Image (cartoon, rainbow over all chains, first blue to last red; front, side, top):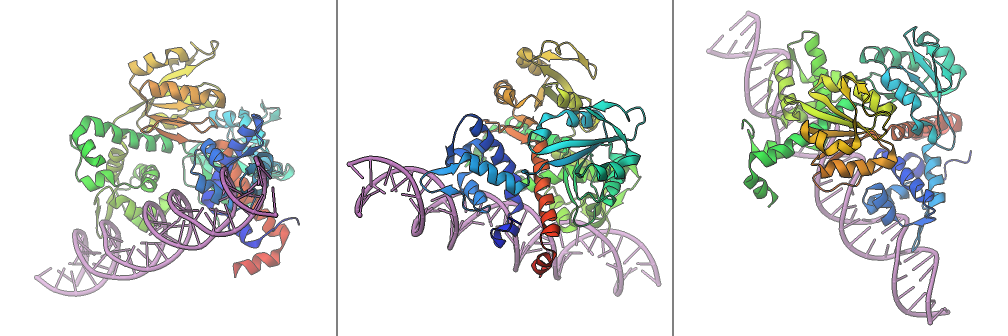
Amino acid sequence: MTRRPSQARERGIPDATVARLPLYLRALNGLAERGIATVSSEDLAVAAGVNSAKLRKDLSHLGSYGTRGVGYDVQYLIYQISRELGLTQDWAVAIVGLGNLGRALANYGGFVSRGFRVAALFDADASVVGEHLVGMAVDHIDDLEAVIGGRGVSIVVIATPASAAQQVADRVIAAGITSILNFAPVVLTVPDGVDVRKVDLSTELQILAFHEQRKADRETGSPMMAEAMDA
Amino acid sequence: MTRRPSQARERGIPDATVARLPLYLRALNGLAERGIATVSSEDLAVAAGVNSAKLRKDLSHLGSYGTRGVGYDVQYLIYQISRELGLTQDWAVAIVGLGNLGRALANYGGFVSRGFRVAALFDADASVVGEHLVGMAVDHIDDLEAVIGGRGVSIVVIATPASAAQQVADRVIAAGITSILNFAPVVLTVPDGVDVRKVDLSTELQILAFHEQRKADRETGSPMMAEAMDA
DNA sequence: CGCACTTTGTGCATGGCTTCACAAAGGTAC
DNA sequence: GTACCTTTGTGAAGCCATGCACAAAGTGCG
């Protein structure tokens, strides 16, 4: 009802901008904790580790929430970004797969802190089912449909072994879920309209290794050449 | 020694391509396990979930390793990508911070599988130091410099609370580390020449929430309008 | 040996993101 | 009330990545 302040705005937030909004939100919360009421795009950009022009353009996609000559009201901007990201409501999250990673995620405080609530836990291993974690019993994967329906789960985190991930994804999608955060190292195949985000630990390490190797080559390879390359 | 087959190639791999190479590598390993010897760009692209033209362009940055009319030799391509990513050597990784997440990472098999070896574990908590995980004693953070130097660590994973992360980063950088994988929800400030990659669980959830909210708005808000927008 | 078929590697056009630079807008001091 | 100062919001330019479409190159069959 209260939505659609401007149609262009509604459809027009670039993905790159959306991906940075959580970053700004975190920086703003840091400022708020330190009792800062107002912040310029320049200062906020530094806190978030981005270019200030980019920050302003990103924020301009949400609306015109700054005051020229002054900056942005920290609390107000926190509210606006939270609203845009959908964090003013809270989201029930289910975690599937309670190995090391799944348990770490279940215990991770950062989830709860901003509008996310772990509402269900699933595993296929009978010796894990029934166990209590973060004040909640682990359900068997067979009850997935009933439990996520009953508890209003709308986001599912997959932390199973790679071999089970696609199967789990198929089931949660059949149960109506359209947002998945996948920690399993596989490419999930999903129908249109389902959003999957992937977090892949070893991919990140491999990218670091690439750059590390390049740095090492520079030094041991030929210092002269590295110098020549700077020119 | 055996490096620099072509100077342009050496400097010229776009970041976007580097970020996808691990993906291709994983897809190729899957094919290799199923005994497949040769693959076309089309099939590999499907397995990796990307466009085949993009895949070919990515691979062309490494060199000309395909055979027209046939495709790519799976084993050979695995080797070439591994070499380019620096996975033919193995990398000693240290994990700092052994809370839930740090322990999960230490136990995570995916690290070891591809050229990465957990070589040191650190924590600041005296009750954790000395504990054995994955066949290794946890060292105190005070010994960081000596231990990482002694064990040839070149990549550090930070899994500490947010409040400690910058301090840890400063110390490992002072000790000569130039590659950091950061799980703490803070923007690390580092000097030039140091690579930081960030993995942020709650950021990913927030991005999903944004899209989920948008989908929900579409349905409940005004189905007519959604139709109109498609035009 | 030549022809038809397959698949790579890439020139080119398109689109999106980033960055610069500045006009517009608001605040403040006198 | 005016003049000056600060900072936002954005037009415009440049850059990088994506995807199409095709020529070049290799295979295999007759």
